[in-house]
Image 1 (cartoon, rainbow, N blue to C red):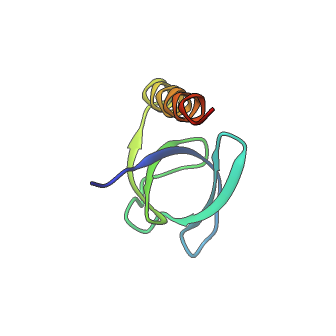
Image 2: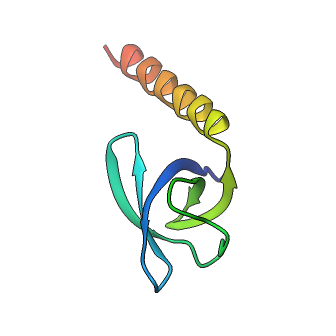
Image 3: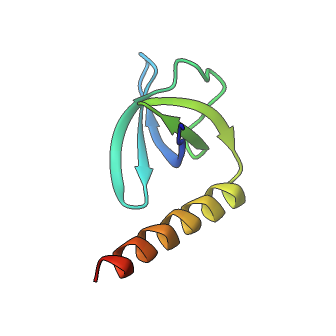
Length: 78
């Protein structure tokens, strides 16, 4: 099973590397597969590559579900 996580693009370099934000955590990823991606867009990230542009509403819903899953997992450990 594969998982793609939404992130917001903060900056893009000329060599198609982007700094993205995953809820406060920043990483550098490749946007070579999405030449249409722009600063401010939300993209789905898989293995260090942006694989799709999504709208902010969908990104926020997905991030919320991921937070709920994390909280549930932490609650079952205690």
